[in-house]
Image (cartoon, rainbow, N blue to C red; front, side):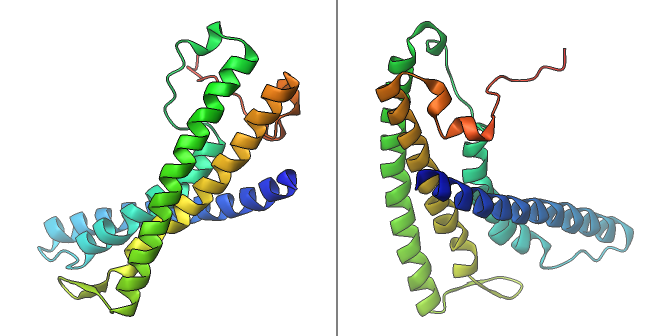
Length: 185
């Protein structure tokens, strides 16, 4: 069951990661063309700042959050990890997963409720034009729900390692992730 959920979640994370990459490309194109129009013709895009700051920045952050967690791309301070046993290391990781899941679950619930209220009330941000607020807020619960699912899978993986003592049995082993940082040397 967990391996199947992992496969489905991986597909969803890859789709969201691709959308985040498209959003990042969109930011680069919008900002570059806005600068060219501003200094070349003295007429920048009037909507550029709004699109980038209200929608695309939020989208790229939250849509990439779970995939980054899957690929161990977040900052991790592991000064003591190498000096502990496998079971102790994964016990600490399990505790971290539980605390993180609770936080992200609360964040998902609150922002899902906020998104629905903004949609129902037709909330807008008045600027160059009226921008719907829910179109920005919706990325937060999408990203955090995927993150809660990824954290849950990681927690099950850590629990199985604690019980068996064998890291080869983990779901993370399916991804073949190398935790080391490549320095290029």
